[in-house]
Length: 294
Image (cartoon, rainbow, N blue to C red):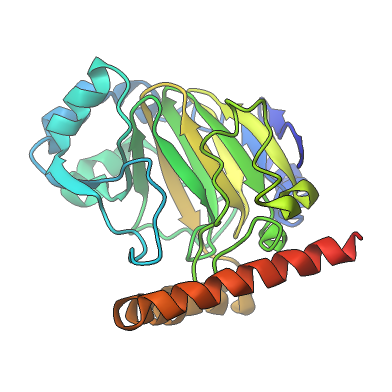
């Protein structure tokens, strides 16, 4: 794989952001986008436990999903406050994602502002919280709705691998899913070398490798593949914005209501044949990518 650091800026004007990053679908980390948000200092483990600690949440472990697992199926459930107590004590390979904490505590939306000077189309009903214990992993995937993302890290650090959507077959995308067959969970322990013997097309992938720090905001363009590892227990918030083009919006709608439902149905009715077909399709797509460079 060919990876490089992402561009990091202290601040950027809306005009330069749109010209250099938004319109070119290029990721960037902005250090000070959230500097005036009360959330930057106000939000912490104790505060969240106080306001939404009794709410039950789904938690996810580090095990990659298999042929029989519906997308986004939780591995267990517990009270949010109990989960936060676990995270505070030390490494916990459990994470929470797509938690709409603001539905349970609407006062929290006053603690940040929507940066509409940078982009339009924010889905204001669904700001989402992502929480992870030290050592927890978000496996390589892209967001199913194909929204542009502004992801702000509030506590802790994450190490991030990013790849453009077009790299999907080099990353061994599972058909009718948003997930990669390739396992990056030992990528950093292996000095940045994935399993090329098992997944040779990964050698062709071009992307970014960086650490997202406390208070920094990542602009992740629509469809970008991402693998994230929590270096510390922490949490971040994603603000989602629909793509401006009709084509982009329709692709996201298809993924949500067409592709996902088809996959879930066949996993329930014919999991083994569906799995075998996917395996053949994945390898065929990867070989085609390798043939282009052969």
